[in-house]
Image (cartoon, rainbow, N blue to C red; front, side, top):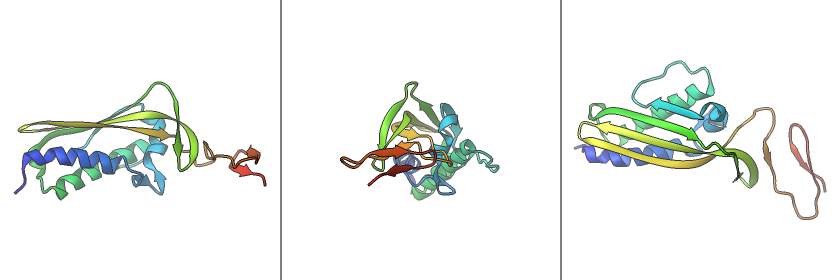
Length: 161
């Protein structure tokens, strides 16, 4: 028997799966592609988006899919949920973070979920470092090996031995 109190775990699990590295669009991390458009985005998690034509719509569609999957796993019917929104905001100041051992320029993004049921509200937020993906070249600099000069070219980083 599903319980409305289980929505708290749905919100927690949704944020964990949606902001994971497994959220991709054709093999690219969906947030890296949508990073320029995510400065202040509000996504409706209950509607369905059928036309994916840019990285933001791909991120929206993926959010809707992940949220519906978490509701189904918890066996919570959609009728329990009145509204569900994901708000994504970007910090105004840029930052640097390590991604797979490489330093990247990016921003801290806050993912905030708010779910309203007929018995109350549940919300949760999570901060993530995101960097912009460019399909032409990497914007991440690999760590240089000791005593080895590093040259950065337009399409790749090269270590000289």
